[in-house]
Structure formats: C-alpha cells, structure tokens
Image (cartoon, rainbow, N blue to C red; front, side, top):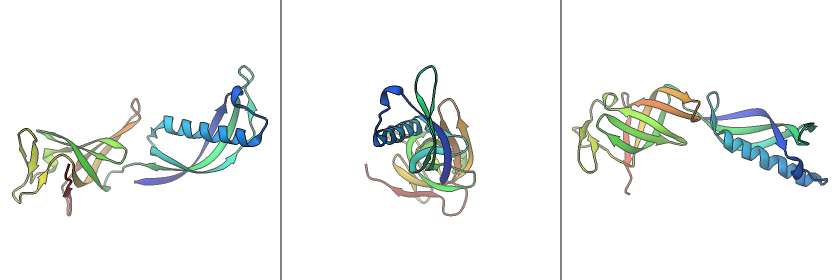
Length: 180
C-alpha cells in the first residue's frame, strides 16, 4: 500500500534562477524537485508519488554548456502508494453499471468490481441503480467497500493504475453507506 523509497534524481535549475546567495539556490532546488515530483505522478515500480519526506543530499552542480542551466544530483526519501495483488483495501463506489461498479481508493480512480465477483449481489436498476443481496445489504454510490485485489495494471500513457477486485472472501463487502 504505502512504500517508503530512497531516490536519486537530477534537478535542473535555469540560469535566471541562479543567485549568489546559497539560500535562494537551495530554495530553487527544493521547489524544482517538488515540481518534478508532482509532474512525474506515478511509475510502475513505485506507484503514485505522494510526498517528498526528506532531502538528504544535493550534489555539486554541473553547468550545461548550451543553456547555462545547472544540473544538480539530489538524493531524497519519498512516500508512494501502490496496490498489490492479494491486498485487501477499502474504496468508495463512484459509478454503478449493470455489469459492476467502479471504486476509488486513494489516488487510484479506476478500480473495477464485476458483478461476477460479488455473486451474492444482484443489480437493481432505477434512477439511482444499486446492487443488493438477500440480506438487504446495498452497494450504492458513496458506499465504502472492502475488497481484495485480483489484478492490477499500470497504464504508461496516463501514468495511472487500474485494478480488478473481488468480494469473494471473508469480511469483504460494504463497510458503510455514507450519507450524501
């Protein structure tokens, strides 16, 4: 779920942002690192980048000949979020279709729970469709659902993860119905 990682990246500071005062340079390096970190969004290996926790080392800058920009090697720690097959998580239902529901879990927007993987539940159509079982347990929009991950995939073009999940197992299913 949450991973703590130590990374080494290169940060490029544009020539116009360079200043003789060391504090302004350090500030520019940190701001650029945070901007690059946010823009990268996610990787297949580490999942979604959430936060830089510490900046451990800023190496010696190297001037790029053509532009005058300076490249600084930096080492830092960060926290990321990644789902794994077999992991049990909770997500919030945001879309209900005849053949299943889509959930959100942390930064992951595309988690699909097929009607085939919630065998006790049947689809109830209407203006606000739901899935309901014989014990009157409902899965509707904004319901928190505990599930097990049966497959995940990283889509490089969107820098996003997608997952297929199931309710087949003990203590899986709706946890609460949030009032909207």
